[in-house]
Length: 112
Length: 113
Image 1 (cartoon, chains in turn yellow, red):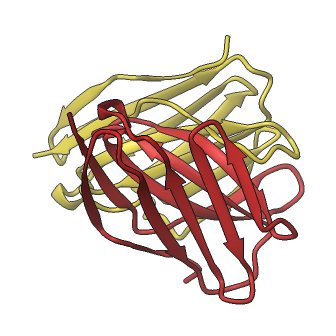
Image 2 (tube, helix red, strand yellow):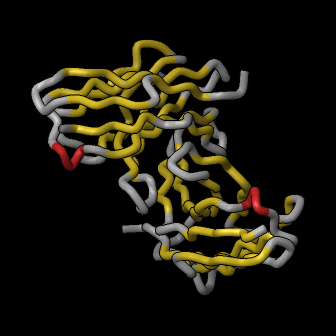
């Protein structure tokens, strides 16, 4: 299995909703990443987990809450989002010491 | 910010022609990578060049790196319609078990059949 899966593919949520994005990989990668990508912009790093521990939080607002329950799974919990949070959310993973990141197809999030 | 700048922002060529994209970055790097993204989907890793390398080939791809000028170029030869995508350069810093990757602004390539 050489892929990163993300669910759901699309999500529409109101500003008062709570929802979660899910990312899964079974490649034995021990680093997992969340990126946010606005239209016509490059991906921007949000969070990095290394060996299930949060290693980087790029000053992301607390309405985004990451979780890494095990080495294969990464969640992003969303609460009280703003319309400007609408974007493509990408998950990636990499081997320890690896150079290449493997990306999932992304979740297209719309906040109404 | 370490974000790279890419040019051109957009490029339109005929199938069979070569496409060249350029990337400039600001700080010293470990590696420079190129990724492709098809419309609104995940990114796919294309090629990596290390800071002590000057040129690398992979199939129809040729990457050069000039660390003195802090620049890189990606050449796609004999382009195909399927090469239509956005291309991002990415600089990385490795830190004990993970990489911190910073993407450039991207070049949107259209290959016309």
